Amino acid sequence: MLEYYRPVKTDFTAVFSNHSIAVHLSGCIDLQQRCEGRSVRTQMRRGNITINPAGTRKLFQHAGGGDFLLVHISPYLVTSVSRDVWDERGERAELIHHFTTRDADLEFLAHKLWREYQAGDVGSGIYAETLGAQLAIHLLRGYSTRAGPASAGLARSRLQPGQLRAAMEYIEENLSADLAISDVANAVLLSSSHFAHAFRNSSGVPPHQYIVQRRIARAKALLRDTSLPISSIATRAGFSTHAHFCVIFQRQTGVAPRAFRRMK
Image (cartoon, rainbow, N blue to C red):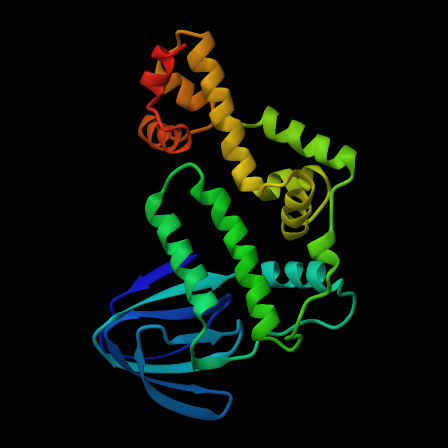
């Protein structure tokens, strides 16, 4: 979940059920936090990041101008990714509170999620799943009790030929649906993060990119072989609206759907 704030003077105490990353976007905020018996105060400027683990009681006081983005991440996602990356069976990885750190990679991923939300096209939800897993891995590597390099197992993981075929068949059969990477992963009995890495290693492309490619391929076939209205083709190929379909089709092919149809 993403939240965008333009803060006013605030004084409150909260316990969040999700992990959260606060990325300062602009301006300057005079921020004070009290957490785990410690009180810290600073001026938050562009690029400053605060990481708040779930379940931690915190007092927040801030004043001043500026904007910030709050990214909420489910503890379940972080735990699932932790098991995949470290092949964890016993010890549970816990995120550690960080106040006003700077991390260009973490900032980039948060901004990328925000841009995908603003784009609102058919690929954004699928891509957001991938970015969420990347955020979880980054947090575990740099801001947890298991901080440090992950095992190479996930990076080398591949799907068995039967799993890859089953995943591709599931995608093909459900292109017109609101397809999520977690749906495909469940079909081959893998977690989302494990599946995403294994699919990319086996097929050469990330699953969200493969899904968009297959939707464009279906749209091309329908444009070439039928006289269906373009709005109907957009729906059958899994695009949420006619407008989004036209934007993504032109982005992927270099021509508008109507122009592509005239070329057949």
